[in-house]
Amino acid sequence: YELRQYETAKWVSTVIWGETQKEATRQGFWKLFHYIQGKNGKGLTHHTVPVTCLIKSGCADFKISFFVPFEHQDSPPQPTNSDVFIEEQKAAPIFVQSFGGFTSPEKYAEETEVLARILRNRG
Image (cartoon, rainbow, N blue to C red; front, side, top):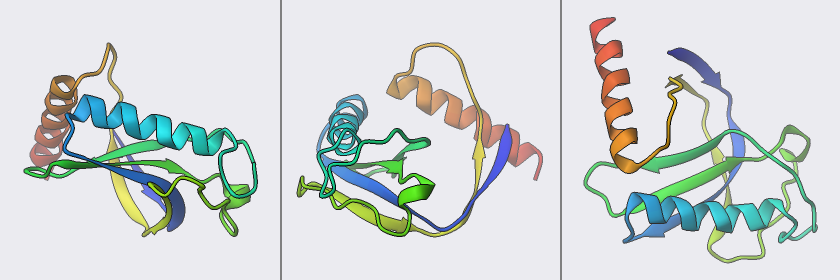
């Protein structure tokens, strides 16, 4: 695993309610993909990483977010889709671990538990 320190930054996000994780991720990705492909207030296109999906235990909503590239942090293009919004996420340390294979909600849950177990064991 790796510990990354993400600084306070702007992200473009969308929230999908009442869908499965797989379907919410698909829908959210496409809404944000259209934004980064020019469907925004400035018509700008850009590619971005990382991409995150916030999953809260027991909730029926999923927040999918794309990092706003450094060159647009001061003035990100405004979304033209009312379901897409710009938000500032606070600085945070994030533990990450890569894994291979195809992803699924079950695979995410399994890999999350593996990482949590490693982190618990290391204190």
